[in-house]
Image (cartoon, rainbow over all chains, first blue to last red; front, side, top):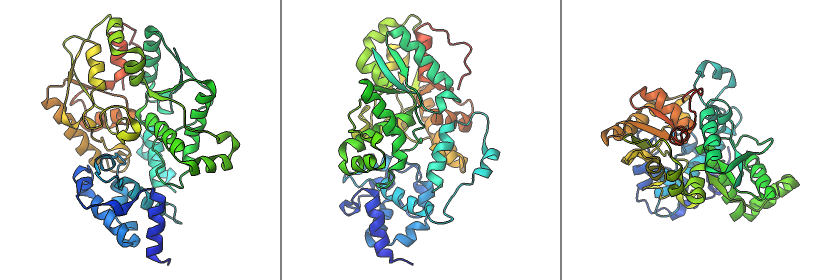
Length: 129
Length: 265
């Protein structure tokens, strides 16, 4: 296994944002429509990365509950952009061997006649490496 | 006025009426949406990762076509608008990304200078809501309409620069110009759940119900949106709790254009 501290550093780089600017106000978590579904809340997510604990984040439900609605990005008073941090870890997860969260063969059964292409395209972007 | 036009995948299939009414309305209002050839799907979500360069290339190609054409690029779908606008902004501010794009393909050499406009911005900033009001022949008097903005048009506000991300008014002003009564409600810029409805519809259901209950509570009798996924989720999750349609449909209606023959969303 790679050095987890090193991995966290890589993840931070790919997020394009600065987790160390976080002042722990919790406004991201207060704004998050998926807050109740996440095992590691957005404000905690930032702290985990600061501590270098990429392993916990890679197995957290948070990766699959973030909707990329950007409420946290909009409301963060320090410009930390938590959604970008979550995205960086999500990318690391789906890019692993066997990391796909969606199988094209399962899709036809999920489709209804009104479902917009936009939904499927977005889901493939978010769930498949 | 001629604008380049990027319809996106869904407007060619499940959200045809978002496209058709907009084109008809544009004609009546004296501007043209000129769809260019061989646009590629924007990917529906903005590729946020710093190393997610390939996902940005379809947008860059479209933006570059408009730059070469010397025209602003107009979108209708909230997702397309979000992705194209953010890719444009990122390319403009990030020299390393520009270098990577060029290294990837000479044809991707682009500086991020194309003006990206949502159709609603064209109505507000190029046509003018006062001129739009003048063109209305069939005012929607007495209709109480709630604007459902969702996430993608507004956030992040610093990049999208569409309207005040926390207290927007562009769609309410649009509704007013059509002679109807806009109904403001707090949840109008909250998320419908987006793509989560594929695997976890109950999450989307919770969000859509909260939003619709709020709109109803404030007196809205119908909702309008610019986003095919918002329209789908709200309709699917809340049934006929509050009818939701595309903003271009009520635009065509107010302009006295034929709105028959196209399936409602």
